[in-house]
Length: 112
Length: 112
Image (tube, rainbow over all chains, first blue to last red; front, side, top):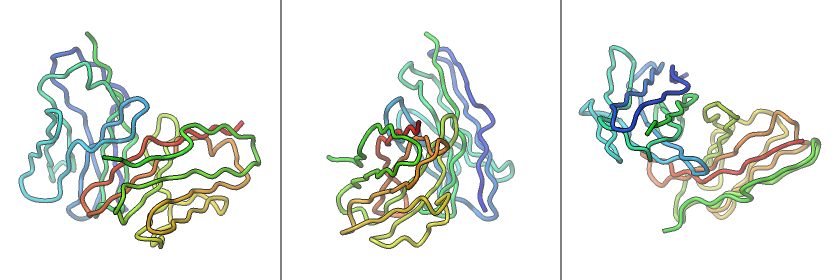
């Protein structure tokens, strides 16, 4: 069965600084990989997804993620964080869209 | 356009009472999912509907939990004889294709 680990429970970065949120997965084949963001009081919104092809995936809001099979990782990055990026971020993995497993989430705080 | 809606947004109940949580998916979406999100934790898969049938009920934590979907539209998650450990946010998502789930804002359930 697939599983996801997000090692960082909480990260604080200054506005304008770069960001990297870590995600490690366990799955026997090439997985479907997703990053979702959850703002306070909101539902989850898909930032980006990887199914196959180019291992560097561009998403919305200036986010990108890179699939590294050798490291079983799918880390989320943003070159310059905005205060509005403060939220909870979830990585998810699955054999398809219908059988996803989510990580515990990383809470991002942005300092002025 | 209308997204996934859930009602109620908040529900406080006493231990031992039954509760019903409702999900209205995006119109035309054939797949519907229920997740549970305990405080500080990731999303826990509960059940998945394709049309009105549930091919995967493996995530339901106990026989106190049940769900149904009618008319390939609205779904209801019922928790009988609620326990304090049932306190969580219950999230619903729907999808049309196999590539993305669209999430509702959730129902926060508190069992006293």
